[in-house]
Length: 354
Image (tube, rainbow, N blue to C red; front, side, top):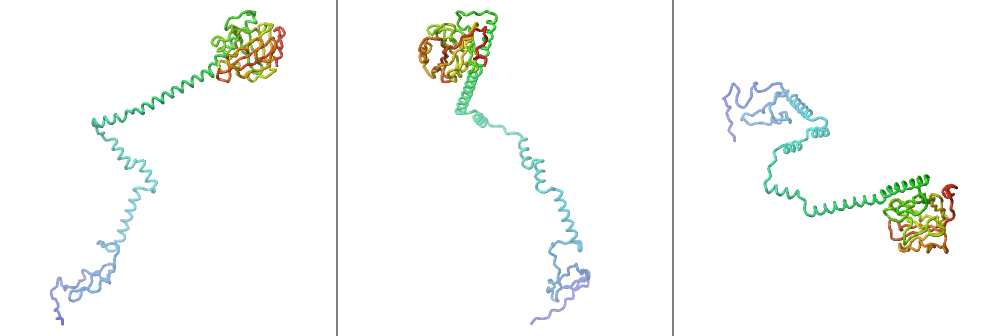
């Protein structure tokens, strides 16, 4: 059995212990939390369940002003965040690029800072790293050699295939004009001609060839100047066009140096070949061709050429040149037979008028 406890008579400010006075209770104020009542023995009752709960915070605040205060704080925080970077992620990226970004600033600071001096070992290592090795030096030398060789070959080919033709055409054209002027002035009469001296003009209408004929077959004096050479020296001496019988033998380059005989392989039987001299035109018709023969076959220049198909003496012409093109391994031979001897006073033959 429990002995009843007497009431406590001590009090503070007229308020017994275990209770609250009006000074601590906001009567009629629903927003003020009331402390739980206690029983007469100072024990708390179930009044805690009657207190209104505040889930936002447990901090102290002025009654009635909590919501507005926190709302203003949230608004100010939002405003400061919006003012820091507006426009979303793309705008922030552009701003970072304009400012260089954190990494750019760090890199700039590192670049502007003083460089650490290298030690002797590090300096030697860097010097060795910059110096190319033996393999690199050899590869560079080989590459430069190939480039130089290629340039030299290109220049040589350009000289052979282009420049020699330009120079030879100029020299041959000048010689042709000089011959025609001398004939008009009566300076050159038929007779014996010096090596390299022009005395006639060769026309091949089908191939559009007009080239001066000079005495001899020297490369330096005749052929390399774009002219056609006459076999006029022993042991390959041949007849002149105005001789009553014989074989008028001619030679010229097929490639480079004017290449007047380049396309004589296109001639066929019946094509005209005309030799113009100071007094006459000698017209030949192509009769036959020998596509390939050794350079030693000089019988093609006989008075009755071997292999030409001619069987007796007559007035013939023989054109000789190298074959295949761009080589001098073999010779190409074209033969013709004179069909007309026409004085210049009668005008040009039909073969040159057509």
